Length: 111
Length: 111
Image (cartoon, each protein chain N blue to C red):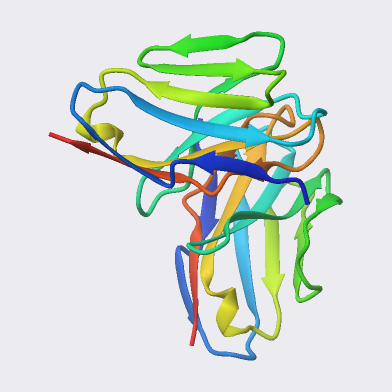
């Protein structure tokens, strides 16, 4: 069974731009969670989607948003990028709300 | 926000030695305690997990010890190998809620 895939793997943007990241979960998994990973803050939860509905949300500003499609694929968007948004963005899919399987992440660099 | 404290921040052990990483949590509602292993450039991978109805779980060289009254759990890596060199994260959640991760422990196993 294929794992979680994320695209693109690397991205370079400039301040003020917006970015969209994509995540395809493991087949059959309906829950998709997004995390931001930085050396200083560690792994921080952004939001979780289940059956196209946002079910949980972390403490991030409204510039961070997401959505999930009927095939469980998910996208997250960051608008008006700031230097501090540079991070590894990880997507995780889950079948049973406990075991999460992570993708390789998208490395975003904001210049 | 609920926190998970993890120690040590970094750990160096000799090949064949025992690596021990500790975590402490606050919320007694947490009912799932996984450990993740992350190699550079990769997403975290689920290593082993435990529920609070047991005090220990062993899978190969990896063991979780769980102390419900102290709200602590630890990862023991027996016969540590250079290939175990990675960053290890503990995490907690309660069913249906978002995960809270520890800050991570960078393990280096010397050959």
